[in-house]
Length: 168
Image (cartoon, rainbow, N blue to C red; front, side):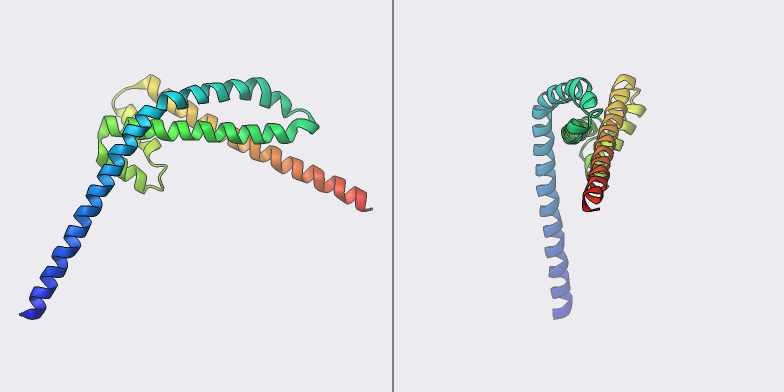
């Protein structure tokens, strides 16, 4: 009988801990969504500025050998701004369209899952302009990141060639 009571009290303790953990997660989720909604207008402004600077400054700098490193670093920073904007927008959209359970599912998908969840939610809600903007921002994030990394790899290859020529 004593073992049965101990097992039952252990199960109650685990259930209470899981409920408390769920409550804390829900509070963090609601607070994170609130914070994301407050920050999102600023992030959109930063993303628009990053897009302008990328097109006007970083892409032309990528053509010249001496300024290529600055262009690569600028592209990587711009990609991070685009990615952060996309993630926060996906978080807020998913929460507003599908609720906290969908956000938690998205967060369990390596944290990035809120963006595909937001895309699916906007697709099913027939929010075509928003879906197009999400896809465009995702492509912009990936493209600027890849181009910046390719520029850095090219710089390293060129520096290695120069070093090898100096050694000979």
